Image (cartoon, rainbow, N blue to C red; front, side):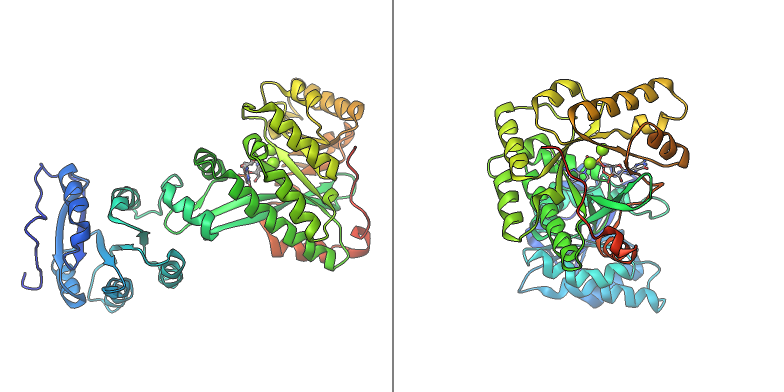
Length: 424
Ligand code: C2E
Ligand code: MG
Ligand code: MG
């Protein structure tokens, strides 16, 4: 294979694994050599070749297919950036049987690389980007999962901490959707819950249950909270410009709110933008143990004193629901969807919902039911006195623009009055 320029160090030293990836580097990629050799040793790579230049790469792939093309892209050697477009052209014109995935190793700004990759990805190219050779093994794990028989997209868990950090820092792929909360008697939209969404360039949509947990593990939850609340404040400003006042909820973990500065920052940003804090509710999930009770209590009292709502999310699923309810200054409880789902068929769930309604009344708390999927669930909740509902049966989470358009077009005069009040 004349076009190939095999580097002597790229040779398997262990028995080859049948499931190992076949790879080819553009150029000798000296900065990646030791990482790639280690992957050959481990068997994660089955074969590794090198080709000097784009034409040589195409010739090499024509002679022998590869799963992956590795390109060390630097300011001095940007040729790797051309690889996906060139390979796509070769495939489109029938000169190559398939398009290998491409890995860019580059210290260039991620946003620049992503902007460049996005059109190619939209055209079907699989491109992963890492900052240094140290991240090659993680990337190869993702490719190995991608290269299933059907060349399926990556499973949701296939993202690295680095991907998440970049998404949080650059807001790349991270966005907020809004799920309506409606008046169960009239169907009118009263507000919405903001839910974070993350689309990974390779893995596609990653479930919040996975990336929120990873963000918490990295202690980057205040950044997520900041990102989501900024988006919610933007929406509030947009609604206010049309004379609309709807209440929007944001999620926060216990540790996020206990972190110094998080509650004061929300307060300052809300006031600075002239937005009524009563239009924002912070939902706290019950699933996390409270490490610093004093800090959490102080933060919640501060938020409540300022006028924000504070909701106990997933009510009934935590270990110390009632203890927290009496100690912390909630303004709302959100009945967990597991009780709502079983409401029509399970007397115990019916009793829990009924008890939650009673607690809400006795303590002056708003009660929201979540996870409403059927008319029967909505009907029974209404009969039990629940006024506000959220669920796929009432409205799926939707893009912010769609939500704003929906509320603007939905009988604007009816929505142009003050939102429901939360108890002091
Ligand atoms: P959550 O706060 O309890 O949010 C409600 C979840 O139930 C959402 O899932 C929503 O899409 C889903 N849901 C709503 N209606 C229905 C329904 O009728 N049926 C079913 N089966 N599900 C329904 P999602 O968006 O996947 O979020 C899961 C959890 O991730 C959230 O639960 C929340 O705890 C967390 N999360 C989402 N966004 C954020 C965020 O920005 N910050 C934090 N800290 N957590 C977030
Ligand atoms: Mg919630
Ligand atoms: Mg919930």
